[in-house]
Image (cartoon, rainbow, N blue to C red; front, side):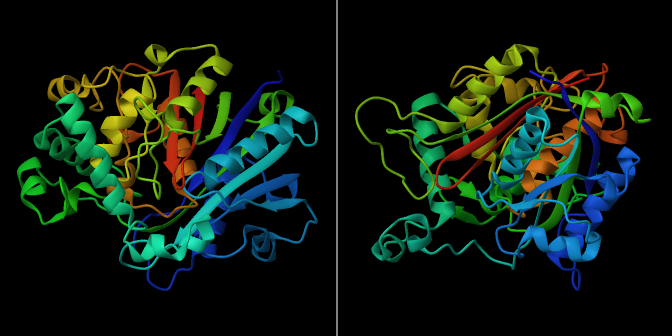
Length: 382
């Protein structure tokens, strides 16, 4: 399989930006990624990207330049950015292009997401019963998990506190003030057992990466980050997912995150034990805890000990969400997956400043999960 590398990564600021459109954030991220690679827009031969609610990505050519390249819109929930990256990588591997772009962006209003059941293949009554409220699903899933594996409410608060600490070190983060675990635990209850400060918020931001063939990466004056593998998966029968909060069949529910992580590790030829820095979807602190096990990094229930021992801190054995994750950055749906990739690229290049993982990490992992049950994962290396 041909080698594909990330040669440029760019990010806008995340969080509320009055007067700045989602499209403008996307253009900013693209230009930053191109500058990082030492390239210009006419060098890009094919592009893929999307947002959940900020318009069609292909129309960005009006701001970037009418070069006539193929630009495919991608809309795949929280995995939009990851799916755009998969498409860009496959374009290079197929020989269709030597330089490709993936971009994701969004600008969401305040408040919870408000999806229509009909858009997700569900009857209208599903929404009338309150089953389209994502916070409710997250509460149901982590409450069940706590009962089964002994995860305490204190651990939920400690994971969120880590996110805010890391966000305070990230100049592009939305939430840049540390919040201690006691304050998080005592904040308003949203859906039992999750409190206000354990959740991310619908947010604003853009992220972009430029990928290239091995020949192009060699001639550019950059430190490329190799894409060892990318994988996306959709839910199988028996999964327990957003908008489908019921256990189907018998036995323990399956996990689409497990399926995607297993596929990407197999394709990369490495295992979870080899990863030195990771980004895991953390729409709320319970998600990060569950995804640690679902992606194969630890056994179910082992997270309680890991968090207490600081394993997932920046200086720990497996630093997780070093940029503050979704909790500190918010979730602009289209941008989240590529924000994760940007952070791991930054860490592997040793360019993360105050939040840099020590020990010169060389192998990273990203994971995104979204409705109605899909996941995208990457393994990156230097």
